[in-house]
Image (cartoon, rainbow, N blue to C red; front, side, top):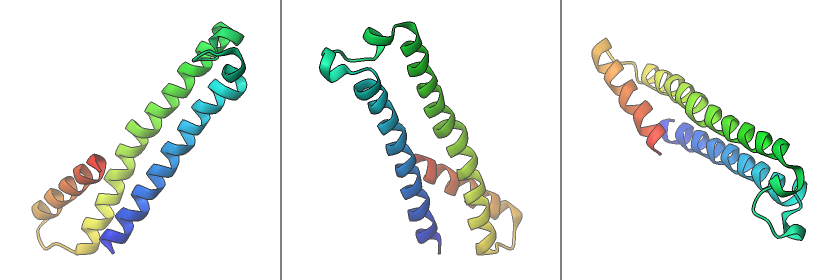
Length: 106
């Protein structure tokens, strides 16, 4: 159960990462027309608004992967530690902390 849950979780995290990277690529190459203009960001075509859009996508990525991933890892490790049904609470919290750390590192 644990391995399958972790595989599904890591697959979803990889999917979200690829979607956000696809969004950044779209903003650069399609919206900013950087293939035609030979540039590396949309600022050459759109100016300051492109800088704001680029910053907002970076903030979205930070929120998803720092806040969202941390909270999801904590909830996932809590449920996995609860499934294992430890007799002592100290052992359960230790395993929960190690699982959360392990998933975040992966």
